[in-house]
Length: 304
Ligand code: HSE
Image (cartoon, protein in one colour):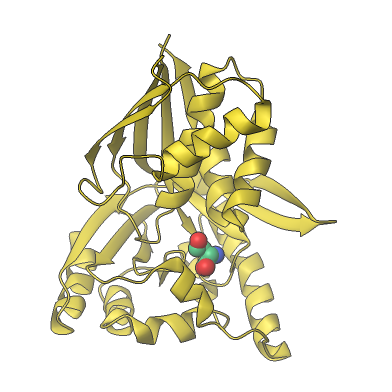
């Protein structure tokens, strides 16, 4: 028996919804899990991250898979994992959440699904530390999360992005900006006016995505809790954001902790990505453009 797992890229925060909302995108990592009997994990990787991703027990997918064996107390006899990665690493597109879910879902599938999807999601959120990438990667669509009584509650929100085209242009500059660094530079305390600024706008962002109102999305997709601290550390990012708006994007934000920027528009328009790329080039950075759509579907596990 083999298990095939697909997990989508995700964009977290969506401007003001810092650590609270995220959206799945139609860019998928895939992996095939088969049992082995040599007591080892053997991993192959194609696509994004080849040459960078460790192929031993330090591999994130392997670590996540081993957590499932520990959690369920099932004996580990060995694993063969073949990965096809499409989500770029360290990009702000949820590659680490995708890897974690891939490992957990693959191992759980091979063991005959001892853990439910809810249990996998809970374990992944606890391990990752914040839910805004993991939850949409698991559930698909637009997902809001809260921590209540030390438990995370994640709800898939209605989104027009599920039904009609809201186009997304991601531009990923060639700049190393690890999430732990992007979180460490944020202030521990915020001013009340900034909290109000973000709370009000994040409600509007979810409403704009529910109704497909890109005008409203443009007015609401502003942030005072993380972007003002992060954007100046990424060369050319502020200019790229402004260039995307000038080229016709309805709304633009840092994708997750960055360094990618995400621009929303009603249709695919190459001018948006090229304008952002030009701004990064002026700052001396090469960049890659990804033309995507939101995905209603979340992670998928198939027995093959
Ligand atoms: N909400 C997180 C952040 C997403 O902005 O730091 C990164 O995983």
